[in-house]
Image (cartoon, rainbow, N blue to C red; front, side):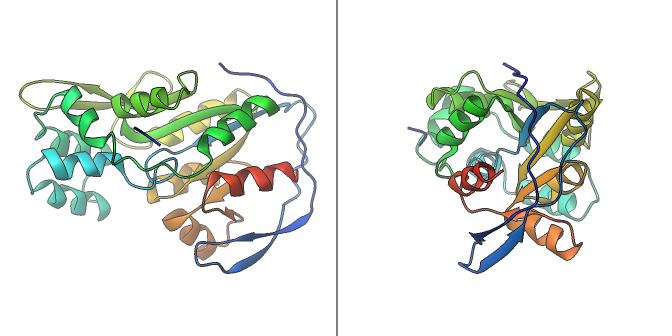
Length: 252
């Protein structure tokens, strides 16, 4: 098996330093920024990516490798080069998948490896009164199933809506305002959360996380997102698992 919004009390971490390990066991001396927010901002929200963040692998890529034609990799190259949007990539690639929901969930059951301590992190957020929300470019049906298998059915998530069809999966992104989107799905939710007065902590790993993460008050980053932040001088905390995130947030 696969290994409701709550308002919190004011959450104002102050400047302090601590040490955390990066991917390569390099020791980083990190200083938390001065993020003392105006007193009206009393709510904290954790916006967390799913594929390659909660999980160690991109589950959608596992499914495409198993059930789509070989040319899906050509669509991926076009997406990574900026020639097509993420919405177009998903429509083209998953349109080749004719497997059933049951077949795909059975396939990933023992292949969806989870980053350690995510369940403990979800409990930590609940204890602190932080609203934990998964916002992912992945597909809703497998995110729902994996969370359910962990007993985390109550975690809010937003992802690509999936319709199963014998002719191929139909996938679409519906933004925070109900508009169907081809791009900037994660950003649409970040903007909505900000408009609701939340102080946002972002957790992610990839290219699609870079733009929304920059809108947030604090960033936990790994892999490509960490490299982008370091390249552009954007403050972030590297992490390897959710225990790292918990330890950092306990210092606040």
